Length: 261
Length: 353
Image 1 (cartoon, rainbow over the protein chains, first blue to last red):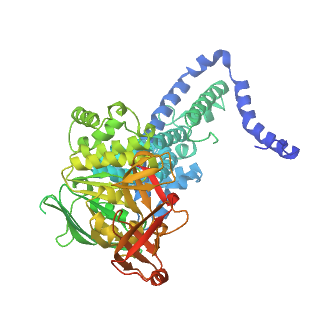
Image 2 (cartoon, chains in turn orange, blue):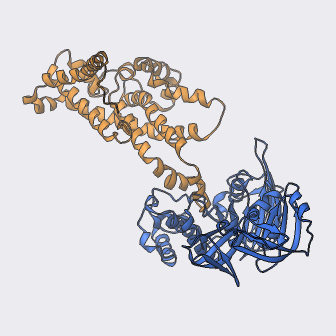
Image 3 (cartoon, rainbow over the protein chains, first blue to last red):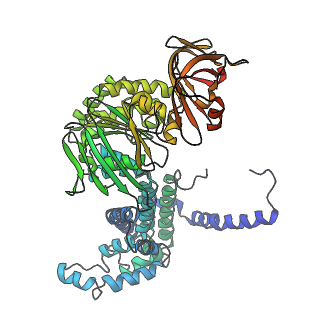
C-alpha cells in the first residue's frame, strides 16, 4: 500500500475506464420501465424466452458436466501424444467468434453435414434449428469454462490422497466419488456456474446453428435482439434480468474468483 | 514366513535411480528402514502399496502373493491389506474424523452405519471419541497422527506400514507420540514396517533395522548392532549420537547407576540424553580443566573409516567416540588399553522422553 496519491493522468484514464463499465448499466437502469416491469416481464415473448433460456442453458451445463468432467480428468491425468493440441482445441471456443462456431456446427451437424446426415439417417434426429441444436451450440461455447476450471483443480490436487484411499481398499470409482470429487468440489461448482452463465448469454452460435424461432430456439439474448426493433420495454426488461443473473453468478463466485488477497 | 512379509522390491526409475531391496519380517516384529532423503524410501512405500509397479521382484504378505514379476501377478493397491500411516497423514480434508476412520471399512463393503459404529468403537479405544466430528484441518499434529493410525488400523490389515509417522510433529509431541506409537505397535499382531530418516525413531521403535542408502540395503541388524558396528560412513553418522535413556534431576541425568552432569538444569523425569561421538575427548592421563564428566574405562573396539576412527569404550557407560586417525596415532592406543574420557556438560543434549 502506497500513501502517495496516484499520478493525475493515470487516475483520469482509470476513471474513464471505470465509467466505460458503469455508464451502460446506469443507462439501462434509467431506461427501465419500473412502474410496469411486472407486466412487461409477464409478456408471452419474455416468458417463452426465459423458459427456453433456462432449459437450454441448464441442458448445456449438464452436457458439459457429462462430457467435460471426463475430458478434464483425461487432460489432467493421462499423458498421451497430442494432449497439448487437444487442450488447445478444447479451449478454442473461448476465443473463437461464436458465429464462426455456429457456422462450423452447421457444416458438421447440419442435415447434409459430416455427422448430421448419418445421424438423421440412423436416428431421425435433426439438430439444426431445434432446441437440441440450441443446447449443443451453447455447450460448444460454454464447456471450455468447465474443462479449464476442473482440469486446473485436478492438477493442483495432491494425488497422494487418492493413493491413500486406494490403500484403504477403495476401488477407482470409490476414490473418484468419495475423495477426488469432494476435494475439487469448490472448483467444480465454480466451473459449472461459469459454464451456465456463458450458456445463458450465448448468442452468435445459437442464432447461426439453431436459428431464432420464437418458442423453439429463441433464448433471452435473441429475444432482446429482436425486441430492440419493436418492443423496447421488453428488451430493456429482459436485459435487466440477464444483468441480475450475471451479478448473482459473480457474487457466488466471489470467494474463488475475484476477491483480491 | 507364512504370515509375515517377504519381499524383494526392485524398481528402476526412468531417470536412472534404482531401488533394489530385500525385506523379511516376521509377524509381531517391527523393522525400520532407515535412510537419508533420496535413498528410495518413498519409492519403497509406493512399491509395497502397489502404486508403483515392480521392475522385478516379489512381495508376499500373510501367505498371499501380492506381486510377482516372474508370474506377472500384481494386486492393485485396494486389494493389498497393508495399513499405511502416511507422511503428513493424508487425512481426507472433506470428511470428519469419524468418516476418515470409517472410510476403509465402507470401501471394503460395510454399510455406512456399520462402518461408523465400528469406527466410533475404535476411536473410543484410541481415546479420540471427542474428536469424532472434527475436520482434519481442526486437529493438532499429534491428534492427526493418532487419527491416521486409527484409520490404518480400522480395516484390520495384515501389516502396518508407517511412513515417517513422527516427522511432521514438533519435538515435544514427538516424544509423547513415539511412546503411544510403541504401545500400538506392540498391540498389532502382524509385521510392522517403519520408514524413517530419524535414527532415534528407528533405534527406539524397531527390533531390526535396514539401513537404506542409494537404493540398496547397506546394513541389516538389531539397533544395537547398527549402533555399535555401523558398516558404512552414513550408518556411523546415524548411529553417531550416543543415545542414553535416563532420568533427569536438576542438572544431572542418572543413566543406569552412572550420573552425568548436564548443562540443562530444567529437565526432570525420563529423558533421552544424546552425546555426539566427536564431543567425547580421549586422554591417556586424567584430564584437567573444566569437563564435568570424566571417567576411566577401557577400549573395547577400534574401527577405522579412513577419515575418522571410532573408538568404543567399556563401562560405566558404553559410548562411541570419534577421533581422527592422526589423533589415534598420537595417543598410541590399542584394544584393551585403559583411557580417560571427558565430556563437557554442554555437550550432553537432553530431551524429554
